[in-house]
Image 1 (cartoon, each protein chain N blue to C red):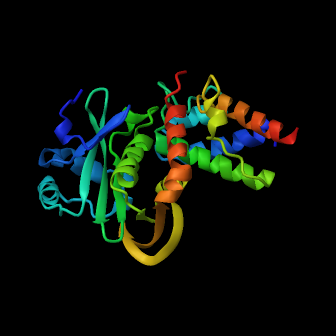
Image 2: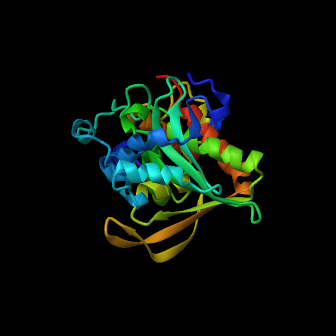
Length: 197
Length: 102
């Protein structure tokens, strides 16, 4: 188990989030080029371009690797970007489970989102999280709305995914809604998923 | 709604998932109630499970004309998770619908 507290952003029962490193380039290059990651758009063309991307992240965003708490194995990634303290808003983005078989049967994805929201709303006192998802990425839209985000609009012909022009669905979650409903729903989901057979 | 109708919704949702492999598709298509949805031998990740729950909540709400939440504290209080297998999820849905109708 990784006990280096300095480099861990948030820790849960099942997973923790640590900052992405240049040494993650090969692994994340493979994840970003999986079929199911195509909706994220802009996949790197080679490992070198992924190294460059990781090295050039601005201070206004945080990019994390999701690691299993039990054995430190990296299984996915998630980002908090466009951090705007004036407006009290951030985007969650680039959420991707790269190692699906390793997380089957485990509440890793829910907990990773939960860890981000706890930091954003409770520690940073951010007012609102927002993001957008390609309209063709129905699995992610279901996921985000189930976990409390509300559909706030559609930007027509906003994205190019797999060579096709598609709409972007805008999603948002306020701190009030998180604290009054979503936090408990996520906590319940994690507890339901960790019930032993 | 009867058990078969609810099962059909679950099966349709499961078979629409890209991550469900051929062997699992066969088990689902055979309507095997022991098919594990979550737990140590499950083949779904949490995004898949949420997709199935969302489909089921939406379909049940359309049919019943009221929203039926499958992930509230009542689910948590059960000894065996409702999301253990297709069979336990069916049991839970029938119980919720039955309780509402009494």
